[in-house]
Image (tube, rainbow, N blue to C red):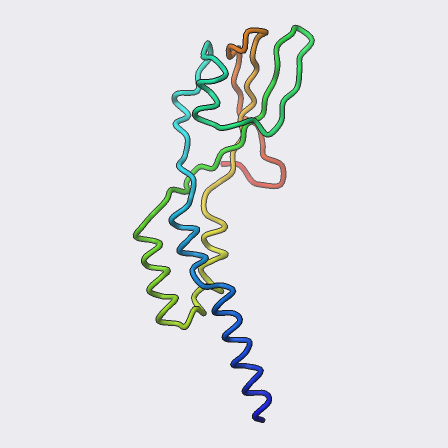
Amino acid sequence: MRIVSLILVFILAFSSVAFSGCSAYLAMTAKEEPDISRVQVDLAREQIELQLGDPVQSSKLADGGSADIYHYVSGDQPNAGRAVHHGVLDVLTLFLWELYASPIELAQGTKKGLEIRYDENDVVMSIRRVAVVGEAQE
């Protein structure tokens, strides 16, 4: 019986260290949602990439332009209140809260995609929403 107790204590201690602070960290470091209203036709590539970051996929078009796919997350913002909430519950539950909270934080937001076509001078010609493979779209 003593060995079983030691094993349980070891598992609990390992879990506490492995999961400690993860949900609080995720809540504080969520990426700001881009201002999609600033993504418009006739803007330069640099202005688009200031909002959306680097494209996840890029391809050259026959007319000399390019088509880029950008992914961004909608509905997840950094939140100090959420992080403090997770931290307090971590301490009160000896970090068992992480078993519940980390998956919730990982599921925050909806991944969305845009396809932006540029002309040969890297000026936006068209913008359209595209599905992000493996994730439901709103």
